[in-house]
Every structure is written in structure tokens, then in C-alpha cells.
Image 1 (cartoon, one colour):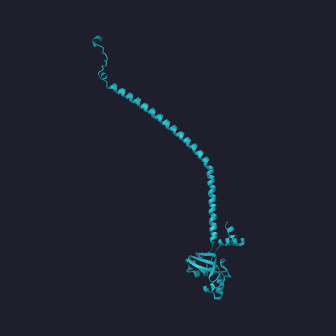
Image 2 (spheres, helix red, strand yellow):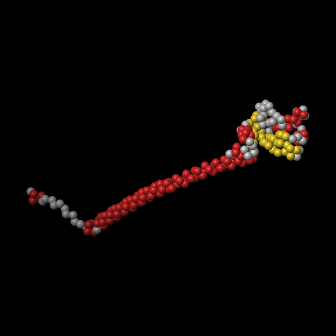
Image 3 (cartoon, rainbow, N blue to C red):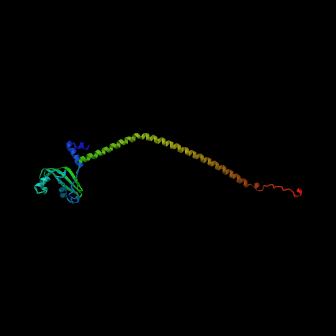
Length: 229
């Protein structure tokens, strides 16, 4: 997707080279990253054509330094035409921004590439159109995956609802059966309780009756001793 977008502005070879450049980095271990305290030092660190593939050897910066004993004159740089580099301190000494420009006249220069130096490591930053295209491509991929997942859920939903309804019916029947059994058990217990209470009351009434308290209990007759003799 990103390469297709780049092909609108570059040839296929240039677009492929641009993508490869985005995955590269450059670092010079001869200088500590904490030494890049301003934009001039950052540009001097970046401007190493022998080792840094991001920096063009035939740029205007190198031409000005060759004509000025290794020193960079920004005023002369603005009077030239062609590729030039400019560094901007963002969060020194850890982060610097380097811009590659194509200058047409002193008052007109177009940015052609962006780089950043983070803790001494130089990277090429993607341009805005490539970044937006990449983000849109990622968003569309996520939306497509979510849409397919939603379709799968909709297809499985009716079967799942049927299974849930059948399971709910079984549980409801089970609960009704258990409830009916509980009601019958309570009814039997209540009937037994009434019977026991009635029997206990009958026994209590019989014990409290006056005829029962004054009843004569026949005594056992003893044989007469004289008669026996």
C-alpha cells in the first residue's frame, strides 16, 4: 500500500530505495551523544559523507566547506542552488532534526527529506503523505478484520441462542419440579403436625378428666388366714 502511494511521486526503484532508507540507521561511536549540545554540532556530526549514507557528498554544504577551509558559511549556502542540509535543535543534546533541502534561489527552498538524531542514532523520517497512507492502511486492515469477525459472530448467534433457549427451558422445568416437590413435602409435614397435635391434645384432655382422677382401682383380695387354717 505504501509502495503504491510512493509510486505516484517516485519511480518504482526510487520508491523501493526510499522504503529501504526508512529501515536504516547511522551511528558514529567516536563522539558521545551528549556532546551534541546545539544545532551546529549536530549538523557537523551528521555531515560525514564517508560513513553516513543519508548525507550526500556533492551537497552544497561540502562545497562551501571546501571553499571556506572546512567552515560552513550559512550566508554563502543560501546563495547557491542544489541540495543542502540544515539542523535544528529540538531537545538537545538528545534529539535533533535535520532537513535536506533543494534550494532554487535565496528565498526559495523546498524540503525533500527529513532526518532525526536520537541519542546519537540518525534515522530517516517518513514524509507526511507516506505516514498518513501507512496509518490509513493499518486502520483499514483493522476495520476489515473487525468486520469479518463480526460476520462470524452473526452467523454463530442464532445457533447459540437456540442452545441457550433449550438450556433455559431445561433449567426452568427442573426448578418447577423441585418447587412442586418442596410444596408436597411441606403439605405432608403440615398434615403430620396436625395429627400429632390432635393426638397430644386428646391424651392431655383424658388425663385432666375428674372421672379419671377418682376412679376406684380394685385391690387384690388376700386369703383369710383363719379359713386357711
